[in-house]
View 1: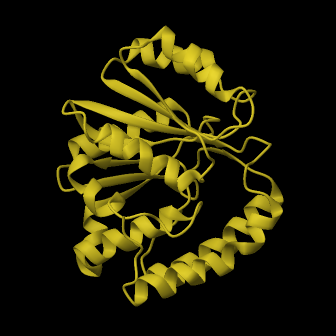
View 2: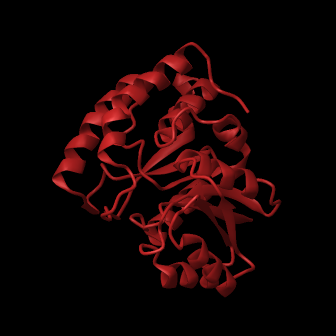
Length: 249
C-alpha cells in the first residue's frame, strides 16, 4: 500500500527544491506526491507542472485558483488522495522541506509498524536533532505552545510541526469538516481526535516523534499581522469546539 504526501504551495517558485522532489518521486514509487497550488501569484504552478512531467505516475498537481490558506489546501489534497484505493496513509509536509524526506519516512514507518496508532506527527521540541530557528520564532512558539496546551488539555509538545501522517481510516474524523482557521488547523485536528477517541484513549492512538532535523527557511508566509491574530484565533477555536459549533461542509 502507498503513502500520499500533500505539499501545500503558495508563492513557492523560488523556494522549491525541485531536484530533491524529483529524486524522491523517482526513487520511491510507493509514495504519491500531491502538490496543491494555493492561488500562487508567482510562477509556482509552472514549476510544479514541469516537476510533474519528470515523474507523472506518482506526482499530481492540483491548482486552486484563489488563495484559501494552508488548511484548505491540505484538506483539498486529502480529499483527492483519499479516493485512491492504493493509498493507505496520507500526510503532509512543508514545501520548503524544513522537515526532510528522511524524517517523514520515519514517521510513516512508525505508523505502519505500530498497529495501535492512527496518527504520527513530528516534534521539534523533543530529542537532540538539528533544530534551527530564529530567537523571535522560538520565543513566539513557546507562547503559542502554552496557549495550545491549555486549550487541548493533552501533553503534546509540538502541535504546529508541518510533518504529519494519518492512517486513511481516520481521515473522515480529522478532515471531513472545514477548518475554522487558515493556519491553525493542526490544533483543530487534535481537538477532533480527542473528541472522537476520548481524552483517556487518544494519547494511545497518536504518537509524537522527535525530528532529527528541522530548519526554518526565511520568507515565511505567516506575517506579523497573522502572528498578532493567533491568540484570538486560538480563543475562537476553543469557543467553537467547546460548544460544538464546528463549521461543516
